[in-house]
Image 1 (cartoon, rainbow, N blue to C red):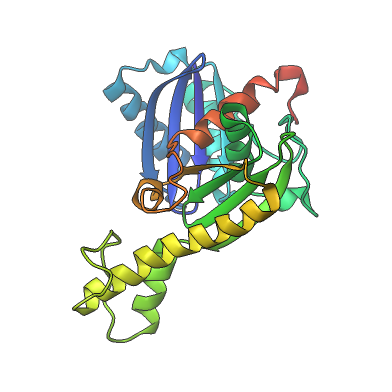
Image 2: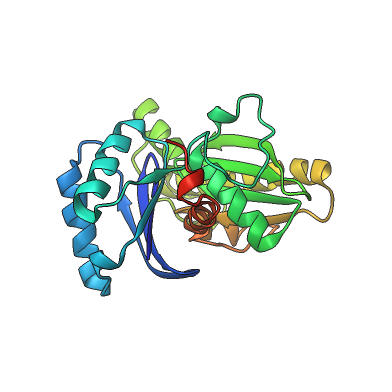
Length: 260
C-alpha cells in the first residue's frame, strides 16, 4: 500500500492507496510545530481507526508547500514505516511538461492536481483548488502545464476583514440566505461567498477565452463543494485529486528513477 501526504499551509491531507483504490483519506490541520513522533503516532492512530495495517505500507509519497515540515515527515516515514519518503520536487518525473518561467516556483500540490486532472478528465483542463489560496491551473490539450492564477482564499479574505476593520467580526463562511444582507454578519457572508463565486466565474471566463470552448473544469480543496455548486461552470468536485496525482507520479518514478 502507498501512503500519500499533501502538506498545505492550512490543512494536511493523507490517503492510503491499495493499487489504484483510495482505501482511506483524512484531513488534518497543518501544525508546523508538530514533531516526527507526534505525526507518527497520529497517523498510526488513524490507521487503526480505519483498519489499515502500518506494516502493509510499502511506499510514502509527499507533496509539501511547508518546507519546515519536510525533514519532520522524512524522519517520521523512516522511523515509523522504515521507508525513505519520496518528495514531489523539481527532479521528480511527472510525465508533464511545465511551461512556467521557473518550474521550481510551482507548488508541488498544483503539479499533482494537474497530473491527476489530465489523467482523469483530459485536456484542455483547468483545476480550481480552494485552499489557503484559490489557485487555477491550466493544462493544455496535449497535457502540458501552462501556468495559472493565484487569488486570496476565502479564509484569508475573511481574516483580513476581521483584522483590518475594527467593527467587523469573524464570521462563518457559508452561502447566505439572501444576497442583500440585513445585518453585518449576513452582509459579510454575502460578500465573501458571492465574491468568491464571482472571482471563480470571472477568471474561468477569461481562461476559457484562451483555452477554447472544450475547456473542462474540476474543483478540489477544502471549500470546493461550498463554492463550486454556485458557479455557472458547475465543475465536478474531486476531493482526492491531489492524492490521486501523488499516486500517479509515484508510479512514474520507480526506485531507480527517483531523485536523491
